[in-house]
Amino acid sequence: MNDRSHLGFNPVPPTRVGELSERSRDIFRSIVESYLDTGEPIGSRTLSQRGIALSPASIRNVMSDLEAMGLLRSPHSSAGRVPTQAGLRLFVDGLLEVGNLGQDERRGIEAQLAASGRKMEDMLTQATTMLSGLSQCAGLVVTPKRDPALKHVEFVPLGPQRALVIIVGEDGTVENRAIETPLGLPPSAFVEATNYLSSRMTGRTLEEARREVLGEIEQQRAELDGLATRLVSAGLAEWSGTQIGDSGSPLLIVRGQARLLEDVTAAGELERIRQLFDDIERKNDLIQLLDLSKQGEGVRIFIGSETNLFSLSGSSVIVSPYTDQQHRVVGVVGVIGPTRVNYARIVPMVDFTAKVLSRLLSQQR
View 1 (tube, helix red, strand yellow):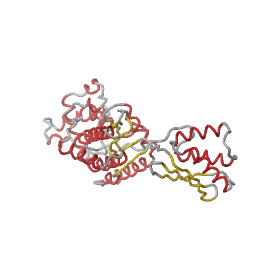
View 2 (tube, one colour; view 1 turned 60 degrees about the vertical axis):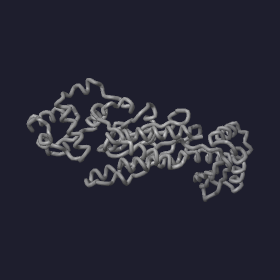
View 3 (cartoon, one colour; view 1 turned 90 degrees about the horizontal axis):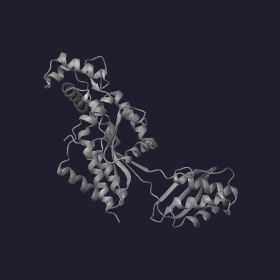
């Protein structure tokens, strides 16, 4: 199957693909597929032995042309070649033959997601774990930040210039967040701030309460002294994880990072994977990347450093958006791993998982 239109691919311009003759495409495809399978460079003699009906000398000439076009590179002094990032992009967008999931795989994905419960959090967590297991990469999902109606808020002093904000939602959720407090804050300010917010936040979402309370503070209509006012402002902004006036950040779930370390033998590759973990921990950049994939339907593939968000070039992200009851894109699900992944298998897997999530979420009441 080579029709990728339903997956949301942006094919490379025909003139770019057309620069490769049939002979060049065959050799290029063989080199990329070998690299994705083994991670090792491949030489002209090996290609000739694998069924390319050309002499090693003729294959070397084609490989040199592909290298001059920036599609191949030689990782060391040997005659073997591996694809460059540009080469992988050309292969993925123009030459990748995407397979179909078998009926057993489809039923397995549907059963695991449905069995995880009807709550969104359960389904999304199961989706990341399942994709990690099926792809041997790290599964990930971005979901909108939850904003339940609030029941209670309390400030607890932790020490000099530190306090704990405790927020209790009407759905039973509890979140604790440590914040910095003004110097010399008296114990009475914590009581005032607790009483003030509790009276105004009950039954409202955090964003609704923030707009109302911060509006009052700005207009100096709050019956609080200056220190308590600063405490309220800090508590609201810090707990939401945003600056005043900004919207809440989405949540990122990552499962199966250890999968990325399997079968890694080269020290350089291991170091790149470790750096990838560091990038994952800096979630803001990854969320920005995944937000890009919400801008269109279907699977999106980001290879290496082309996004300018990762600090290394040896990673790929394969993601697809999912929708809610109103068919609005609300999140992204997919996998992250080295550039040498089985795109042909992972792309339809991510695509189908996103569609199942969308269908299950549309059935929620």
